[in-house]
Image (cartoon, rainbow, N blue to C red):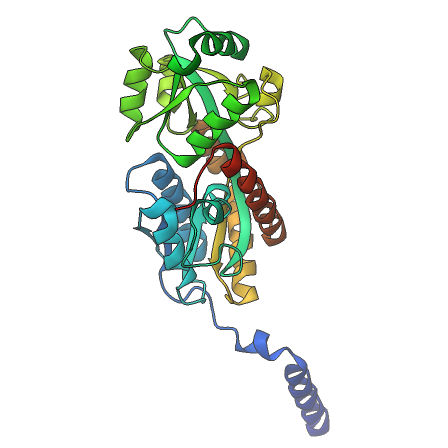
Length: 327
């Protein structure tokens, strides 16, 4: 039988232990306490929007709360990025985005930003990596980069390539720079237009993300010649990396991560990191990545921040080569 003195001593010890615990840990509320929203920089129904919704559903299953996708396209993602930066740092607003071409690129595309791409965010973890792919028409006689380059050199400034986004422009200009080509950019507003123009022989090549043209690749409507990344991707092993295909100095990587507003409490960030790494390891996520031409990129906050700093430096060089004047 426990004595009154022993009982009092045990209670006193428990009180001392509780008082020694971190005030932040003891005060940390349950998370999440309400639906989470993730801001999407892309219009509904696009390939990137589908990717965000896939991760949102997976997170909802783990967190036990709805994860609502709010689409805020425009200004090269700056509207969505600013929305996250200005949100309450309580873990109920997150950003699932291609960080390499949003946070990292923005300082080199705009003279003045309404947010600091590094200081106004806490990186949670990395998700996946991919790249753009150099494509020609499925009817084209060109099977290698060497054959395409010879054709473009012969055409001079009569040769052309199509773009629908800044990364495709950068990839095209890196390609031109690697071989001293005079090829001219032609801007398109949508995927269908430039594929039709490509197959009609009105433009010679384009760089596009794998998810956008997955069905065309399968159907043979377009032919891939090389990745814009230096190495092959595990999910599309039949497409050579830029270095292997003979394109020197090219390594344009597209990677996705999760971030939250600066000053979001560490325990919340840790929980999100744990959940998203569970999602990345899920077999369903692997199948989704294969379908969309992405490799899994499990990581942590430190890796995501390190990559952000590195790719911000890279984009300074990309902007110089592509002759991009900040707006």
